[in-house]
Amino acid sequence: MRKTAALLLLGLPLAFGRPAAAQAPVQYSVAFPNAVHHEARVTVTFTDVPAGPLQVRMARSSPGRYALHEFAKNVYDVQATDSKGKTLSVDKPDPYGWNVTGHDGTVRFTYTLFGDRTDGTYAGIDSRHAHLNMPATLAFARDLEQRPAEVKFELPQGWTVASQLRPDAVKGTYFAPHMQYLMDSPTSLGPQQVRSWQEQGKTIEMQVLHDGTAAELDAFANQTKKVVKEAAAVFGGLPDYDFGRYTFVANYLPQTSGDGMEHRNSTSLTSNRPLRGSGALDNLGTVSHEFFHSWNVERIRPKDLEPFDFERANMSSGLWFAEGFTQYYGELLLRRAGIYTDEQYCQEALSGLVGAMLLSPGAKRYSPVYMSQQAPFVDAAAAIDPNNRSNTYLSYYYIGGANALALDLELRQRYKTDLDTYMRTLWQQQGQFQSNYAPEKPYTLQDLQRVLGQVAKDTAFAGQFFRQHIYGHELPKYEELLAPAGMLVRPARAGQASLAARLQFNADSSATLGTTSVGSPLYTAGLDREDVLLKFEGQKPTNAKEMQKRLAAHKPGDVVQVEVRARDGIRTVPVTLVEDPALEVVTYEQAKKPLTKAQKKFREAWLGSKAK
Ligand SMILES: [Zn+2]
Image 1 (cartoon, rainbow, N blue to C red):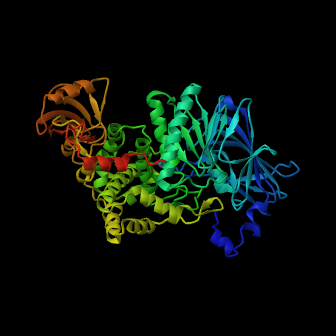
Image 2: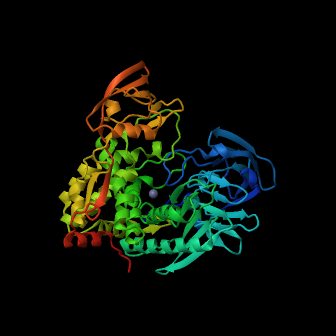
């Protein structure tokens, strides 16, 4: 559990009545005697253990990832001994942990960990590297969460350590002030390539495992420097990183799964795409998003995520802001850093946000707050039963990002301020206060609304915005909002007839339907998931290209006969084609419309560099 400075001042005792620093640290040793088979051997030594059973647990959840992951499932060969090496009794009270009894104040708890998934959630171990997300790797003991931790990595030759943990050169260990910080500190072990620089008196470093050249990494680090400057410009400076350093813990090896995960003083960046060509741009997008998180979600933190509970799923009503606004800025910073052109920004960022918002059936039914609350079921959650999310859900990344875009444009047009000012004011009022390596003033949704009222100097507007767009699900008017920037929303494939459906083409020239969207031609015709399209106007659908050809012979509004094998048998149904619903955002220049001076100025103020 985290404690705030306010509680300390009240004189409330910490666990066992001693300040954390004076408590016996929990000591971890992580070795790799069988890395090629994805195993690590972990030893945890607890000393000064109070009498009674020691309740050792593996986490069930991981900060920044909102589904349950049951990390105990990859732990085996569990043993416990006391200070004299005597074997202790280990019971299994539940699926997630072990109770150790009969100890003499010391418990040495050892286990084998299997891990072969390199991403922001799990542990990936092989002969080349180990990428360790700590909740997936390190066991902890209940009631000892306030104790500091020291981790010793027994490194294979040539491997070095990339982590936000504080190194102790004398002991050869890595330090965390408490269990919350330890669990927040993913660590990559391997032959790192390092790029490090000073920005505003703070150390920014990239620790990278990749198969590319030094020149590719140099170019990537140079782009990252620009992104770092643009992010800092939004908030008026960098945060005070806890140990004076921010680390990009990056793994771009081929065996890696794509992910990005934010932490207080670092981020875990994982991708199998190399640092060249479109891979570099893709990876830079993750850099930008995750670095913005070192303010938004790590320090400007939703109250309902504090303190993070490692023994259950954590739900927040604010992920539309924590993730969605970060999504918006991750892309915006790439434009401001000159990595995107205006046209690329429209294509790569705005078209996706606006299209998702205006086309998703879910966004017409439920609010950003509701979408945020679904995270434990969608954020890398695994289940084998089908769901109806394509009709009831839009990711809080998109619904939040699309609302950030609308709010930024509205603040600029009507209130002579902008979203940067809003973010900076939130930073000043809620984010910059940290104590004991944790946020001191995490926010509620009421705080977000209050600060918006201050920045806009219009509390009625803030109330209405939250009522309509955050607690409600009204869609922003993007055409009006984008026009002052000389941009417009238009059909991406105007006039093209479409079934607006996801089809999976089969070897026998049929096509299986995915879940059909409310209001789409096939949904309206009474068809749903797993129904099989046998014939389209008397002919087999064959493949996507053939299907496209046949649709091209039609106009939106045409009625076609479709033969399907549904759950109640084979039948032929009439289906009314629609115009391909895909939307795109383009500049006036792309649309061959004249751009006024005022539009040019507005766009420059929005998308131009803010870095000094
Ligand atoms: Zn994020």
